[in-house]
Image 1 (tube, rainbow over the protein chains, first blue to last red):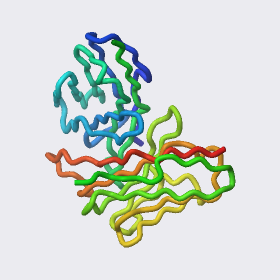
Image 2: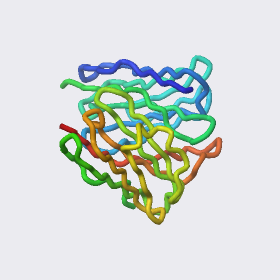
Image 3: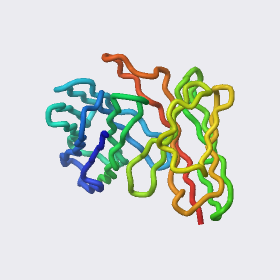
Length: 112
Length: 119
């Protein structure tokens, strides 16, 4: 059964700094998703990583996938206050219902 | 295009009461999912509808939870009677395709959630 572990749970960082959120998963996942959630809002899809070595970038966020290590990372470059949110990674089951298996989320706070 | 909507946004009830949560998926999305996040924990799958049929309800905690999707449009999730451990945020999501093709970046689209507090 797929399990997804995400760390850290909380991250407080200064503006302008870089940091990485890690997402480990236990067995094969069809693909890997990253979502962002602002308080009281919907989960917003950030990235869909389809294959080993996939790298996607949007603004100050870059996500990568290493299927051999069963690891995905979300790298934040030169953080700004607007990036404060909760970030979730999710894998998917490869049999039965195509459901998402989420990590615990990382609550990011960027301090001015 | 309207996104996934959920009602209510918050609900505070007492133990033993009944609560019904509603989800309106994106128009045309046959697949509808319910998930739940208990405070500080991961978001967990509850069940999946394809149109009006329950495809997978393996994540439903117990028989106090009843989900319906009348006519394959909106869905309701009823908790009766509510217990303290039912508190959390209930998310609904919808998608157009059941299983994305290998090159597809289709995702599940999530609503803002209903925060349920059972006192």
